[in-house]
Length: 561
Ligand code: GLC
Ligand code: CA
Image (tube, rainbow, N blue to C red):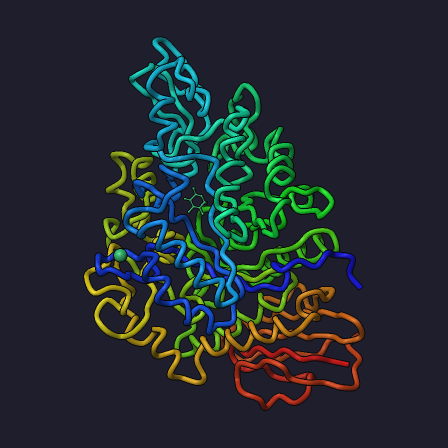
């Protein structure tokens, strides 16, 4: 028996909603809360137990809500606090919990605190943010060499007081100064505010950046982001998270998942080990960076790289922490065709195989809106089609050379852009994919006529019904939720094969990542007398777990005794 505590989120499957792109309830082309309410039955039908909602707070939308101007109210475009209350009540009535996004590394520059802060050096809010004098004559050079995660310097000069403020993201997202106890109190109080309104947890946005090294020293030269080592897992981060947990979170039955870019297993354990009372889980990035160079530029996907990373985390957190499992979110391109290559006519088989490949692992799985119907990326032709603020920054970094590199930039963005995941949810084959009645804020993937929810619900063999089955199987199987993990054929670039075991039962997972037949031998040490096929993306004609030739993208899950 594992010595890991039982908590509701460990038994949960969580569905992520990016509200701007989910469903438009009032016909203005922008997704909103009324739209979400109208789809609660759909969400419930999938069998998920919780929703993680990307930010829906007041925001001028420089980074689609990740720039908050009022933490205690709802974005005008999304509706009102009353709509939100109706939504959470509707979720709870359906047995669905609500995880809100907590974006507290930075605010919007339109937040009242920042407006005050920038107004004068002796304003009581000055120290809520990170202000410094510039370098050089007249202080016209940034205070240090850190770069924003979107590109370019992480500092913005402000005329009013002749100083610079730090922004690790866009210049409309100034970083909060967590070393100021008042800022920490504000965060505690707003977290409490939402918990008292019934929220069941938080996804903590870029939480590993909140504590910066004292004196803000220059960072090491780096082709990617400069300054990472000065602001990631900073000196006081554990102290700050621990206090938030002790003073607020621990008084509620809530969960936290921290977005933890660049986190190692050792650090992951510091954040999530159960006796440390900080976060419950983290989102790691290594697996979604396994097809990139310097965490940015696309390189060829190799299954063995993905498996290596996932296995390390499976073994690493075993009995001590808890994993979060995901392939997609609002910052990642779609997993089709990212992890399966050219799927041609086999989109359904490939998507179902991917579902099995990560949802049978140990941890809490997340499904990003549209993943359950196999939504895909789109080929963008023109740089102006991209809506993401990050793209504007990348263009700025290239400066006058941008037109020369434009083709290459579009090529890279077609693999990596966050815009892929932000195209509206495809509900049906009518105009605007049933997302809205007017032209949406962001283009619709032209494949919506074939790939949409209505179609998926009509087709008993759809990806949607398969997800439902996988989720249901997981929810009813302590073996899948709590079993020990063991990997087979580590170095194979074709097949993902692993085993889980729990109280005398074993689960065998076999996934062919290739769009062609692949021979497969049952691992030598796998002795069993009884065998039951539980999940299969080709129908039920694989009675025995034995040596076999796997069909293209074939995936099977057996229980062995
Ligand atoms: C996180 C969010 C991303 C946002 C950034 C800044 O990485 O997932 O969408 O741009 O934080 O808040
Ligand atoms: Ca709307």
